[in-house]
Amino acid sequence: MDTWIIVLIVVVVVVVLAAVLLGGRRARERRVESRRTEAHELRSEAGDQARRAKEREAMAEEQAERARREREEAQERMRRADEVDPDVDD
Image (cartoon, rainbow, N blue to C red; front, side, top):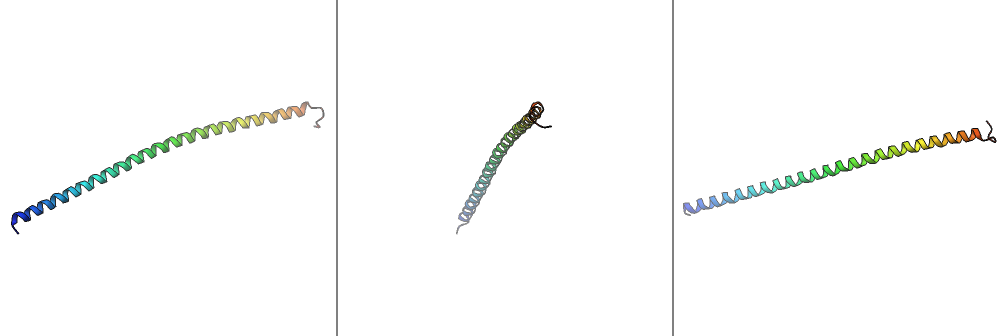
């Protein structure tokens, strides 16, 4: 074989290898960027979910406190009714 053909084959092989390596690197970068985007979205959704859960928890605590006060008020009224009722033995 002539020397110029061997050089041409080597140059073509080097160019093809460089293209494959660059293509692989770009594909990997796109996958990494895609995963970063997905992770960002997941973190954002998790933050929103945590915020909503905290709001619901605060509302539940407030409602529980309101129920406790109403129960105490009802018990106080029951004691008062027992005091007023002449038929209840002390």
